[in-house]
Length: 99
Image 1 (cartoon, one colour):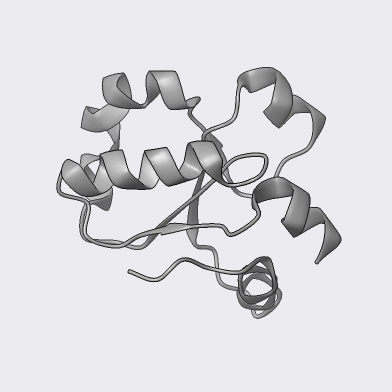
Image 2 (cartoon, rainbow, N blue to C red):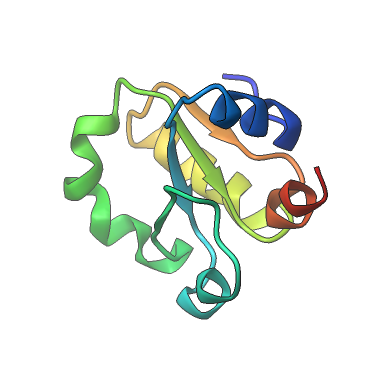
């Protein structure tokens, strides 16, 4: 699945959509700034949370971090685990805040 731009995500949110967003930054980073409605699961904790995410395997899941690197790893990992519609937020939180 193609990744998503911050502008596209903000447009969808403004239209009332509530996509599933997973923030793979560390907890302290999430506490400093977060995307409304996102769920914080630090990248290193993601493997241990797979059972909690099982019901999302066939749904769109948007992953993000600070700039896109960790979330690219999260996307690859989730895809390998059978998640069929994982999208990385291009540019991460930095780009989202500027969009």
